[in-house]
Image 1 (cartoon, helix red, strand yellow):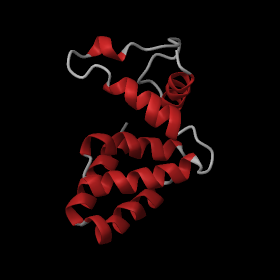
Image 2 (cartoon, helix red, strand yellow):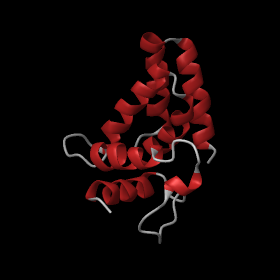
Image 3 (tube, rainbow, N blue to C red):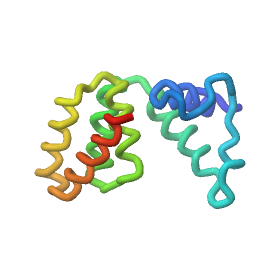
Image 4 (cartoon, one colour):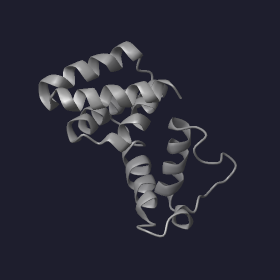
Length: 125
């Protein structure tokens, strides 16, 4: 297992507890999908292993940056998970509401409204 994969799995488990088995050192994502089976491997290694593991920004700050990007992109599928991650990384619900409010000026009301819905789902977890 590559170092970035091991780091990525560790970070993923910390930020999204319960989604991967804790006792399983490696996870075979490819076995879970017939289509684009390596996509999750790429995400774990590149995003969680290389980016979220870097020095330079706190995880809290990375959550703010990530949410801003995802809101602007209208990335509905990822927003709910990243609102949950942001809570684990120390942001409060009030601060996350400010992220949503602030995004109206740069990404537009529909994107902010989509983000609000994703946040509500994340808070209900």
